[in-house]
Length: 250
Image (cartoon, rainbow, N blue to C red; front, side):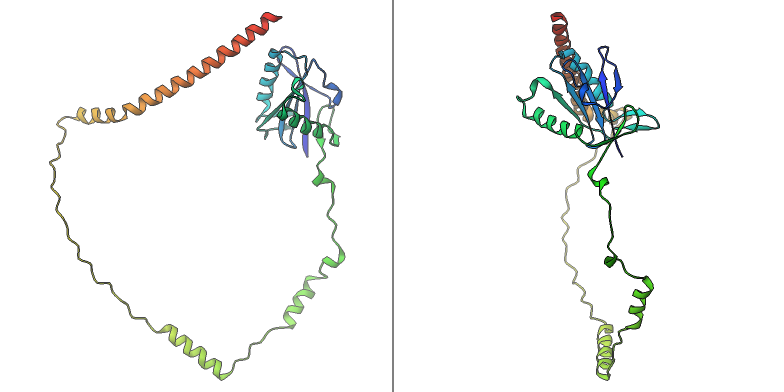
């Protein structure tokens, strides 16, 4: 059972489940398809959608990725980890968009079963075929197979020569082998001059040394966090400028 369903992205940023139909893909719409066959979240944009509309739809697709959608007593698409976006304006101009669109059309053309008004079950090729066993490939009974093994026991004949050789082999194996003890190697110890170890007179001296050794790592970690915060601020400023520019066009 591989479930799937479609969503229409509204202007206020909400999504609503819609019936499984190819006619819903209109130029002024953004459609999200959540399916467990690949699994993936498919985000389709019509050529009349603005930048703001596409960004709102992409956020809704991100919320479905990894979490899925609760319908009835199950969660559909909880294992999805990828979003495949298709912009109708880029068809025929971008190779990745063309590849996604080809895969998307294959999913839409698959046979499916209606579970209810919005949920469908995509038919898999592995689930169509049935395994049929031929009579020749099935053994008659386990008892007959076991009786053949019991009726034909293999008896090994033992001659006096073989008894002798076996006894000799066991004796040769039980003889203890002489142990060779390695001669102890002579080691010369070179005395190293010992330096006097200065013990700290006060407890705070040890604490100062420990803080000084970790100061560089702490500073590096702080600088890395500052750089990450700067990157986030730059991306937020960029999105805000794009949003402002698109809002001014309206």
